[in-house]
Amino acid sequence: MVFMIDEAIDREVASDAMGTFQVDERSVVPIWIQIRKRIVYLITSGKYKTDERLPSVRDLSVRLGVNYNTINKVYQDLERDGFIFTKRGKGTFVSDVASIEYCPDDGEMEALAADFVENALGKGMEPEDIIDLVRSEIVKLEGPKGI
Image 1: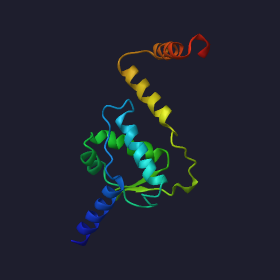
Image 2 (image 1 turned 60 degrees about the vertical axis):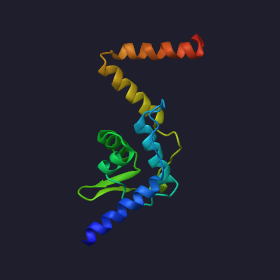
Image 3 (image 1 turned 180 degrees about the vertical axis):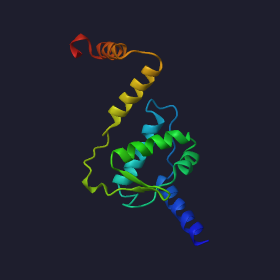
Image 4 (image 1 turned 90 degrees about the vertical axis):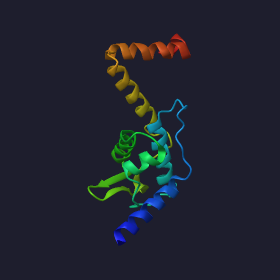
């Protein structure tokens, strides 16, 4: 019974740290990046403390009303970047981020590019076509001198 109380407290604390955060489905920023940025903010601002247990992937997906796989992708990305770590069977916890050099847009452009390339490849585009498309968009935005 004590385990259930501790688990409920962990869930309550984690939910409180998320605050009233909601994803903006109309934003051009992908949902997973919105969530990633929120969690990184909560970690770097100290609202989530080192070794604090984060909500489970399932709990956070229900709370935010997003697909389980979206939250899983966020957690994998944060773990790769050293913000969190997973203890098998125990949950996901905040890493000691004192040694991480972080600026608010770290990894965002790479994440957007990875999503773009993955989607383009999934639609049958060849790598050369993707490069040509990006160059074409740069020319539209900056003119021929931009390349």
